[in-house]
Length: 457
Image (cartoon, rainbow, N blue to C red; front, side):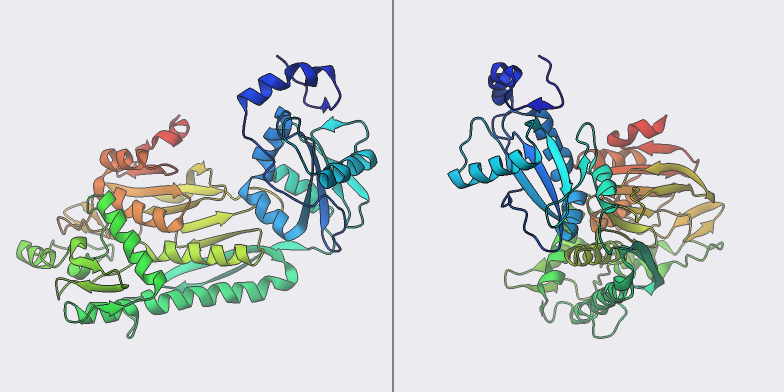
């Protein structure tokens, strides 16, 4: 049976076909309740006429636009969503029916569904919003041209934080940019203050000093981060491990030729590595069962900080941005011009050559490998990433990029996949929902997780 994109409420098609539609989609209801009145003093109104339990195009618009995370963030700051719903199999209160009929009489007398209008704060019609095969970004772009007194632009700040190069880009009103950038920087500095293993007095330094002697009471955020680290360690069978401790002190990753350390030194350091020696108590204390074990967050801390700043900025109404911590980055929303953010994967041997562009709408990506920090031994390149189980630096992994919903998770998994290698690492990624990976080996061969196979050709 064929359904027109624009369905009139009283049409014969509706009467004949409602049962088929309703049985196929029994529980879908417009998910953004709103008081259907046009009385907001500050925001534009997005008036949506919908048949939530019978109109297929209405349901598609709800899913693809109104429930899109980017659109929700944008609408929270700029719009009042007004739903005028006309269900056929679900009863509304008499008051809602009266209000919806009043809105229909004024704005949609022909009874067309779906039908979406952008109204001024006073209820004046500004424009009709297309609903056929439209994306959330296209709707946002259409609405932006009608926003009053808004000059969105991309403001950025670049500086060294957590021992890495950070670049923070926010899509904000021009007048708010400096203050929001300062808040972002302060948040990262605060995280560095308690996460760093080299800052005296940090929580990590206290743990590394206390060892088995004294369990340390830690804040919620720190406790939960360590808990997640241990979970990733178990998931990757130890390929990711924050307890790699002194293994890094055995090597000098200065792109020069070096001999490998004596095997006895490697084994001595390995004796004090192991995530199973880190223990969390129910009363939020952390302690080690090895007094010489040291932890560090170099393989996850930047991603964690990027996620925290993103959450903070979204809460403050920032509709788009990128937090980039030396290649570990997270994005949300759109650019100031309404376009998606683009992230390119460069050739490890020629950073000016982008091998492919990856889709990261509201996603995070972390890239690791041996292209920047390494040393050479007999012509072999050894990455700064160390296998926590062998004590040896990884070889054969030029660039590993992991995409997920969290910069923290992407950061940790990029390290784990580097240690596991292309075959095993990608197999791990393929078993985790919402995670994808591109692995570039030392021969410049590209290996893709199942969700990115389209980029292999």
